[in-house]
Length: 32
Image (tube, rainbow, N blue to C red; front, side, top):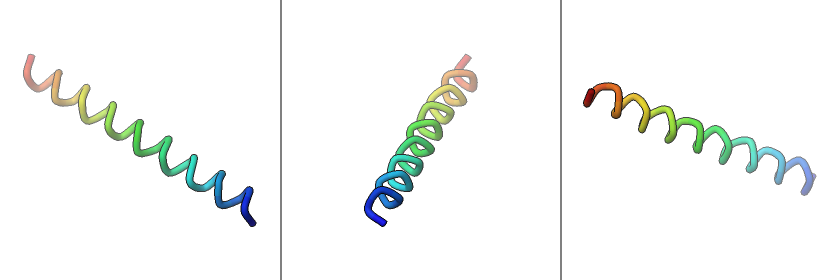
């Protein structure tokens, strides 16, 4: 259970980082 929970947390954090990066890129493109 603990290992699975850590995997889920890592997955969510990874997705959150990807979303933040995507948002930053979209903002940069919109500025240009």
